[in-house]
Image 1 (spheres, rainbow, N blue to C red):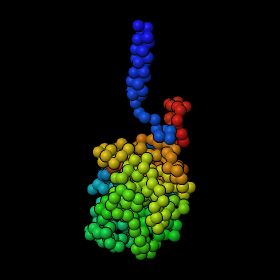
Image 2: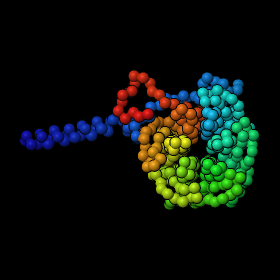
Image 3: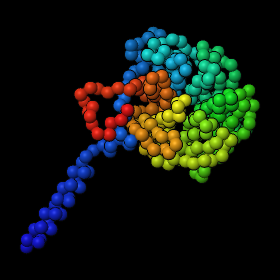
Image 4: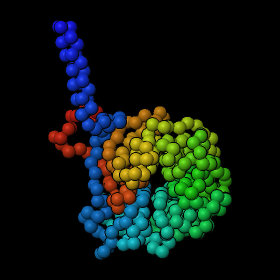
Length: 330
């Protein structure tokens, strides 16, 4: 009888521990919680936008070397590209009548603003003040030739000015051009194997000229050399929406657990992650909705969210609240 009681007691204890464990709630942040605070209405609070302006879906944000912030938005109550200083003061805007559906934004080493348009199937280069300098693709004509795209998503640059276009929603390839705009090469087709894509959504280049491609619907990031040779892939980071790499090779992403979560929640259930570029190890993470990510000055992280927000994340923490919590990292 005593042995039976002992067995029942042990069984109850194991069950109690299992139930308590199941009730612990949120899974700990991968790599530890990042110590950041957030400005959730960057560019809207305080309000310096022209009277009556407001964002629609905000697909992208890009930060220039001087801290100027460019935002791409899709609503009818503001110009497609809205420009702010680093604290959120409205400076200027451009792109009215030029865009169909703005998607990606990047700023090159000359301070030129590059945008992809998934409605017109174009890649466009602007001066910093909004003058259209060049466009690539055939307006309104989707294709998979050397002079057409099918809903291109992003742009990345090599130090010599050559650039890559992830082509993207309609196609499944990365296209490389010279800085003069000459077609050089491409790689990729639809599929799940190495060098194949299902929605190459973001593309970045590190200091070694390796090319990182967010293969979003395949729930992975693929890494290539600058001529498209497959090097490796990371399959543990989920369905990555946006990426950026600092001049010091610090890789940051905004991602989702998987493509089903991303599409079902319409980018709301995201996480920002700091990733070791050599190993893919997650160094820290925090919650944030987000479609696009751009690194700013002084550790700032800018997120373009389809909710119609720009989030400016900056290093900091609320004093006296979980300051000494285990796993909190800077």
